[in-house]
Length: 332
Ligand code: BDR
Ligand code: CA
Image 1: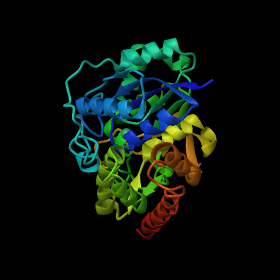
Image 2 (image 1 turned 60 degrees about the horizontal axis):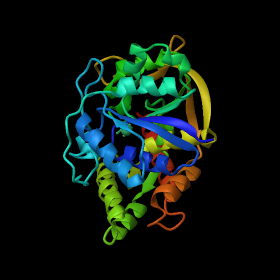
Image 3 (image 1 turned 120 degrees about the vertical axis):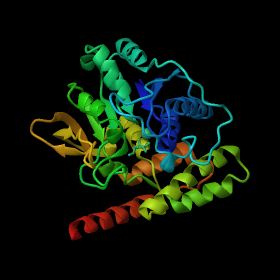
């Protein structure tokens, strides 16, 4: 029987790839999608989630969520994900203001689905709010896969912190201490899931004749421009797609149990993760079978336009980038 899953997301380019992947995995049954501030504002995130869902054939309800972090200001990542949240894609539908119903939806879905799996691909505001309203759902929940944090690799927001946990560190801290079956998917593993520049260029070619290929080309080439400019990387890292792949098949990674905490400071440690004896328990993905994950993404999302093996290069490119980043850190 497929695993019932609720996806919490802030689309976002890699969120889009992750949703398209989830739609094609027969082992997952999406029961609801909740949206969140993060890569873009809440109205655009919800509009984008609906667009991706309709293209990917997802029929589950999409419920708008938190417009703001628990205590801080929202900080949309427009330089990473574009003015509309999907790179160069200009959605036909305008973003509309809607009422936040995500926490209620999460509570209802947890109560209605035994040991519901949750996959969070944005800041953790919605999940933290749901648990604060209904603490009983903490025990009722199944595994909670969370894309967030960085332990030993460069961050995406500051050199030390990853964007989702930087955006709402108080929510991450709350979730970390909520006694969940937390499966953390940090940048240490997601940075290995890179779509190589060569595949994006092939999608741009395919996009000249095919509207859906053009959607991916327009989204991914913006993301690739960001990676080229800020990280000198030819391609783009689809962090959130790994969280979905692992929710479907945890054996695609190696996991280690640890106690960690998240920094609530206002300096460049904001949102940074470190091991701590007093921290919350998490099962953390520490290694990933990147080739297999990329092959899965390729098969499920891009096989109509890309020949088999087109994404394989991304794993080697990411390894090289991470090795260079590690040697820079040692040299400092
Ligand atoms: C995370 O932040 C966002 O930019 C991505 O969508 C991903 O969820 C990576 O740091
Ligand atoms: Ca995201």
